[in-house]
Image: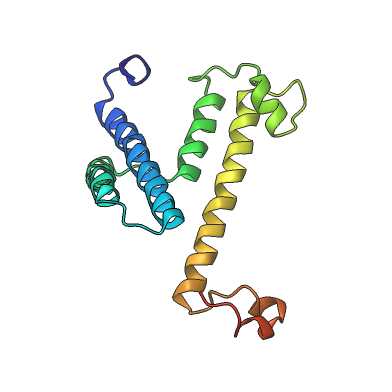
Amino acid sequence: MNIFFRNKYLHQSVMLEAVAVVPGMVSALIYHIKSLQGMHHDGGWIGNLLHNPENGQLHLITWMEVGKPEDAVTSYAHFIKEVDAGRIKNFKAPDIAIAYWNLDETVTLRDVVLAVLAGEALHRDTNHHFSNRIRAGRESLFEDLGHTENKSRIKY
């Protein structure tokens, strides 16, 4: 990671803490499922395994508070400006990006950044939409479809 981030220790810390929580979370989930399958107590594994992700979460929040990172949409907009200004080389897009977004073979890095930016904007809008629904007490998506008969069967 030192090669990738060079001397950007704050960036490195955020990445490390974001990734470091995964093994504990996944392991705790596996033990949770095994415990339910076997209908027995997990023997204290879940609580111990979740200690690391909880600790890492606070590390991550701390570093994000220190760095005040921009949201993804803003970051990718800056990325495009850097490409347009010539400070980042606008090379041919990687084949994996061309295949994933079904892009033309002639697209460049800038086109990939635009595709990612569009996806991030959609994620942002979707997350805000659902957050607003939760805040308004409208968590059931069936209500918008006129399927109010499902409301009594499905509890959220």
